[in-house]
Image (cartoon, rainbow, N blue to C red; front, side):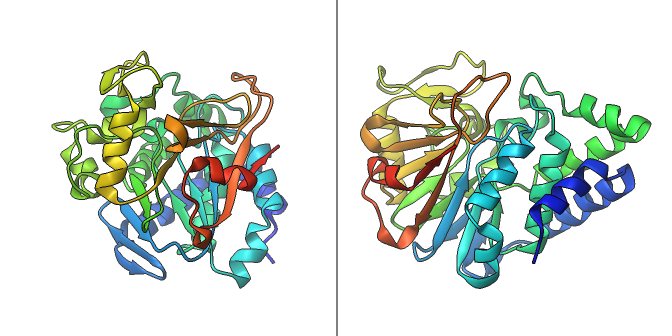
Length: 307
């Protein structure tokens, strides 16, 4: 049986050679994922899956190793992954702002290697392209502090890995999962599949990684983040209709309760880390049998686990 505590301990002790090797192997694994992969269908940077299995969905972690270990143990993911049909879906923002960014990356990449068809790694704005770097982006400093002059080499390798993380996941006739917000000018599934290739000519990827829902507007409005947009319920509904799904699951925004619901049940936001600099009293993750096919995000509340 895989021991999560032991992997976390090894993450704290890994040297630059081991860390670089893990990143390189994981990048090669992600780059090879296309077509039918078990129960997943992969096109470009889009993952599609039928609503027929259990899923654990994890929001922003931002270097919070303790919360990640808690989620894995509380959800019994390792036991379920060796026995059942289950997916572990990360919504992005693994590093920066927390004390254990390197260790979080180490653990999630190990999980991906152990269960390649059961772990889905999505791209957050803290894993964004070079022209959309989040601030503060302290990963390079963390790597330098840990590995000295080798830190810049490790950083270049992990930047390459970011390019292979998934942009979106669609659960057939149920929901879409992205990190940030709705690409307001998307007109077809191809705008999700190839958003990474269209960037920066098209703003789909920027909005997917950076945008936030707003309850007071119609259409879109410039975001105070400096990238992405604020978007209204009408934009959300148009996007859901295009994909023939019922609601959106995202991360990106801190929440005191670890989750929040927007746009009359059309959006669920998950935030899965606690502590500085957010001071949220609770974090949360979602554990759900997708086959029950809830109608909206309010019906997900019994399956949201706060801690």
